[in-house]
Image 1 (spheres, rainbow, N blue to C red):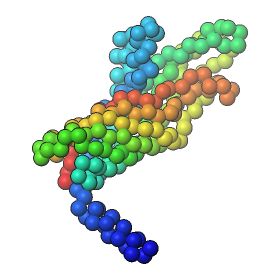
Image 2 (cartoon, rainbow, N blue to C red; image 1 turned 120 degrees about the vertical axis):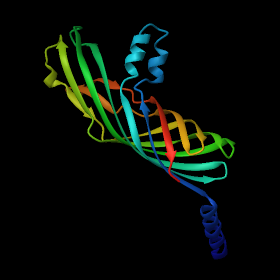
Image 3 (cartoon, rainbow, N blue to C red; image 1 turned 135 degrees about the vertical axis):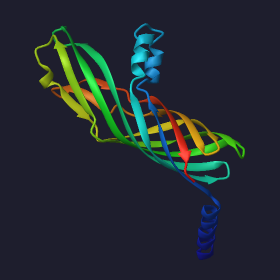
Image 4 (cartoon, rainbow, N blue to C red; image 1 turned 90 degrees about the horizontal axis):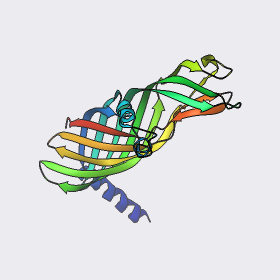
Length: 220
Protein backbone atom coordinates (compact mmCIF):
# COMPACT_ATOMS: atom_id res chain seq x y z
CA UNK A 1 0.00 0.00 0.00
CA UNK A 2 2.84 2.38 0.86
CA UNK A 3 4.60 1.59 -2.42
CA UNK A 4 1.40 2.29 -4.34
CA UNK A 5 0.92 5.61 -2.51
CA UNK A 6 4.54 6.63 -3.15
CA UNK A 7 4.19 5.72 -6.83
CA UNK A 8 1.01 7.82 -7.10
CA UNK A 9 2.70 10.81 -5.45
CA UNK A 10 5.70 10.52 -7.75
CA UNK A 11 3.48 10.25 -10.81
CA UNK A 12 1.50 13.32 -9.74
CA UNK A 13 4.72 15.24 -9.04
CA UNK A 14 6.14 14.37 -12.46
CA UNK A 15 2.87 15.41 -14.09
CA UNK A 16 2.94 18.84 -12.44
CA UNK A 17 6.62 19.33 -13.25
CA UNK A 18 6.00 18.47 -16.91
CA UNK A 19 2.83 20.56 -17.09
CA UNK A 20 2.87 23.91 -18.88
CA UNK A 21 1.92 26.83 -16.65
CA UNK A 22 0.62 30.13 -18.02
CA UNK A 23 -0.45 33.23 -16.15
CA UNK A 24 -2.15 36.24 -17.66
CA UNK A 25 -4.56 39.14 -17.48
CA UNK A 26 -7.87 39.43 -19.28
CA UNK A 27 -10.80 41.75 -19.90
CA UNK A 28 -14.03 41.50 -21.80
CA UNK A 29 -17.67 42.25 -22.39
CA UNK A 30 -20.70 40.94 -20.48
CA UNK A 31 -24.12 41.14 -22.13
CA UNK A 32 -27.39 40.90 -20.24
CA UNK A 33 -28.81 38.91 -23.16
CA UNK A 34 -29.76 35.30 -22.40
CA UNK A 35 -31.20 32.35 -24.31
CA UNK A 36 -34.69 33.03 -22.91
CA UNK A 37 -34.59 36.53 -24.41
CA UNK A 38 -33.58 35.27 -27.85
CA UNK A 39 -36.22 32.53 -27.81
CA UNK A 40 -39.02 35.00 -27.09
CA UNK A 41 -38.21 37.05 -30.22
CA UNK A 42 -40.18 34.59 -32.36
CA UNK A 43 -43.27 34.87 -30.12
CA UNK A 44 -43.46 38.66 -30.42
CA UNK A 45 -42.89 39.19 -26.69
CA UNK A 46 -39.37 40.33 -27.46
CA UNK A 47 -38.21 42.34 -30.45
CA UNK A 48 -34.91 43.47 -31.93
CA UNK A 49 -35.08 46.76 -30.03
CA UNK A 50 -35.37 44.75 -26.82
CA UNK A 51 -32.34 42.68 -27.82
CA UNK A 52 -30.40 45.87 -28.50
CA UNK A 53 -31.21 47.20 -25.05
CA UNK A 54 -30.00 43.92 -23.51
CA UNK A 55 -26.60 44.40 -25.13
CA UNK A 56 -25.97 47.08 -22.54
CA UNK A 57 -22.88 48.17 -20.74
CA UNK A 58 -21.09 45.27 -19.12
CA UNK A 59 -17.42 44.74 -18.41
CA UNK A 60 -15.13 42.35 -16.60
CA UNK A 61 -11.39 42.26 -15.90
CA UNK A 62 -9.04 40.12 -13.89
CA UNK A 63 -6.39 37.43 -13.96
CA UNK A 64 -6.21 33.79 -15.00
CA UNK A 65 -3.84 30.84 -14.76
CA UNK A 66 -3.66 27.84 -17.06
CA UNK A 67 -2.11 24.52 -16.15
CA UNK A 68 -1.77 22.37 -19.26
CA UNK A 69 -1.27 18.62 -19.58
CA UNK A 70 -0.78 18.05 -23.32
CA UNK A 71 -4.25 18.75 -24.79
CA UNK A 72 -6.06 18.95 -21.45
CA UNK A 73 -5.81 22.03 -19.22
CA UNK A 74 -7.23 23.51 -16.04
CA UNK A 75 -7.92 27.25 -15.92
CA UNK A 76 -8.98 29.08 -12.73
CA UNK A 77 -9.84 32.79 -13.00
CA UNK A 78 -10.50 35.71 -10.68
CA UNK A 79 -12.61 38.43 -12.29
CA UNK A 80 -14.38 41.62 -11.28
CA UNK A 81 -17.57 42.20 -13.31
CA UNK A 82 -19.78 45.25 -13.54
CA UNK A 83 -22.77 46.29 -15.62
CA UNK A 84 -26.27 47.72 -15.63
CA UNK A 85 -29.77 46.82 -16.74
CA UNK A 86 -32.83 49.08 -17.12
CA UNK A 87 -36.31 47.78 -17.82
CA UNK A 88 -40.00 48.16 -16.90
CA UNK A 89 -41.84 45.66 -14.71
CA UNK A 90 -45.63 45.13 -15.07
CA UNK A 91 -47.89 42.76 -13.13
CA UNK A 92 -51.45 42.34 -11.85
CA UNK A 93 -52.08 42.88 -8.14
CA UNK A 94 -54.67 41.04 -6.00
CA UNK A 95 -57.47 43.29 -7.30
CA UNK A 96 -56.45 42.68 -10.96
CA UNK A 97 -55.12 46.22 -11.24
CA UNK A 98 -52.07 46.71 -13.46
CA UNK A 99 -48.98 47.85 -11.56
CA UNK A 100 -45.79 48.97 -13.30
CA UNK A 101 -42.49 50.56 -12.37
CA UNK A 102 -39.05 51.23 -13.84
CA UNK A 103 -36.18 49.20 -12.45
CA UNK A 104 -32.47 49.97 -12.64
CA UNK A 105 -29.96 47.29 -11.66
CA UNK A 106 -26.33 48.18 -11.00
CA UNK A 107 -24.31 44.97 -11.13
CA UNK A 108 -21.04 44.49 -9.26
CA UNK A 109 -19.70 40.97 -8.69
CA UNK A 110 -16.54 38.93 -8.19
CA UNK A 111 -16.57 35.84 -10.42
CA UNK A 112 -14.41 32.73 -10.02
CA UNK A 113 -14.70 30.32 -12.99
CA UNK A 114 -12.93 26.95 -12.57
CA UNK A 115 -12.67 25.58 -16.10
CA UNK A 116 -11.50 22.27 -17.54
CA UNK A 117 -10.60 22.50 -21.20
CA UNK A 118 -9.52 20.40 -24.15
CA UNK A 119 -7.51 21.54 -27.20
CA UNK A 120 -9.22 20.40 -30.40
CA UNK A 121 -6.40 21.89 -32.47
CA UNK A 122 -2.97 22.30 -30.91
CA UNK A 123 -0.34 23.99 -33.09
CA UNK A 124 2.68 26.07 -32.15
CA UNK A 125 1.14 29.40 -33.16
CA UNK A 126 -2.60 28.77 -32.78
CA UNK A 127 -4.93 26.38 -30.99
CA UNK A 128 -8.69 25.87 -30.80
CA UNK A 129 -10.20 24.67 -27.53
CA UNK A 130 -13.46 23.95 -25.73
CA UNK A 131 -14.04 24.23 -21.99
CA UNK A 132 -16.61 24.01 -19.21
CA UNK A 133 -16.74 24.11 -15.44
CA UNK A 134 -18.33 25.58 -12.33
CA UNK A 135 -18.51 29.32 -11.74
CA UNK A 136 -18.71 31.00 -8.34
CA UNK A 137 -20.24 34.48 -8.20
CA UNK A 138 -20.09 36.79 -5.18
CA UNK A 139 -21.98 40.06 -4.74
CA UNK A 140 -19.62 43.04 -4.51
CA UNK A 141 -22.08 45.90 -4.04
CA UNK A 142 -24.89 45.34 -6.58
CA UNK A 143 -27.99 47.51 -6.06
CA UNK A 144 -31.56 47.83 -7.33
CA UNK A 145 -33.39 51.13 -7.82
CA UNK A 146 -37.14 51.62 -8.44
CA UNK A 147 -38.86 54.65 -10.01
CA UNK A 148 -42.11 55.81 -11.68
CA UNK A 149 -44.46 53.38 -9.97
CA UNK A 150 -48.07 53.50 -11.17
CA UNK A 151 -51.08 51.57 -9.87
CA UNK A 152 -51.36 49.53 -6.68
CA UNK A 153 -51.80 50.71 -3.11
CA UNK A 154 -48.12 51.01 -2.28
CA UNK A 155 -45.03 53.09 -3.12
CA UNK A 156 -41.52 52.31 -4.36
CA UNK A 157 -40.29 52.44 -0.75
CA UNK A 158 -42.33 49.26 -0.13
CA UNK A 159 -40.36 47.37 -2.78
CA UNK A 160 -37.53 45.33 -1.27
CA UNK A 161 -34.15 44.57 -2.79
CA UNK A 162 -33.12 40.93 -2.66
CA UNK A 163 -29.54 40.50 -3.88
CA UNK A 164 -28.02 37.15 -2.99
CA UNK A 165 -24.54 37.13 -1.50
CA UNK A 166 -23.31 34.25 -3.68
CA UNK A 167 -24.38 31.96 -6.50
CA UNK A 168 -23.01 28.79 -8.08
CA UNK A 169 -23.41 28.18 -11.78
CA UNK A 170 -21.83 26.61 -14.86
CA UNK A 171 -19.86 28.19 -17.67
CA UNK A 172 -18.87 26.75 -21.02
CA UNK A 173 -17.73 27.77 -24.46
CA UNK A 174 -14.86 27.73 -26.91
CA UNK A 175 -11.71 29.75 -27.40
CA UNK A 176 -8.87 30.49 -29.79
CA UNK A 177 -5.24 31.12 -28.82
CA UNK A 178 -2.93 32.99 -31.19
CA UNK A 179 0.60 33.28 -29.80
CA UNK A 180 0.12 34.91 -26.36
CA UNK A 181 -3.46 36.10 -26.96
CA UNK A 182 -6.52 34.10 -25.82
CA UNK A 183 -10.00 34.93 -27.17
CA UNK A 184 -12.99 33.26 -25.46
CA UNK A 185 -16.70 33.05 -26.29
CA UNK A 186 -18.77 31.81 -23.34
CA UNK A 187 -22.26 31.21 -22.06
CA UNK A 188 -22.85 31.02 -18.32
CA UNK A 189 -25.75 29.26 -16.63
CA UNK A 190 -26.33 30.77 -13.21
CA UNK A 191 -29.30 31.37 -10.92
CA UNK A 192 -31.29 34.57 -10.46
CA UNK A 193 -29.19 36.76 -8.19
CA UNK A 194 -31.31 39.94 -8.27
CA UNK A 195 -34.96 39.82 -7.18
CA UNK A 196 -37.62 42.34 -6.18
CA UNK A 197 -40.00 41.49 -3.35
CA UNK A 198 -43.15 43.03 -1.90
CA UNK A 199 -44.02 41.74 1.57
CA UNK A 200 -41.90 38.59 0.99
CA UNK A 201 -43.62 37.97 -2.35
CA UNK A 202 -41.22 37.83 -5.32
CA UNK A 203 -42.46 40.21 -8.04
CA UNK A 204 -39.70 39.85 -10.58
CA UNK A 205 -36.22 38.42 -10.97
CA UNK A 206 -33.41 38.83 -13.47
CA UNK A 207 -32.09 35.74 -15.27
CA UNK A 208 -28.32 35.92 -14.87
CA UNK A 209 -27.46 33.43 -17.64
CA UNK A 210 -25.71 35.50 -20.31
CA UNK A 211 -23.16 35.58 -23.12
CA UNK A 212 -19.58 36.65 -22.38
CA UNK A 213 -16.67 37.58 -24.67
CA UNK A 214 -13.16 38.08 -23.31
CA UNK A 215 -9.61 38.64 -24.52
CA UNK A 216 -6.63 37.53 -22.45
CA UNK A 217 -2.90 38.04 -22.66
CA UNK A 218 -0.53 35.40 -21.36
CA UNK A 219 2.24 37.25 -19.54
CA UNK A 220 4.21 33.99 -19.43
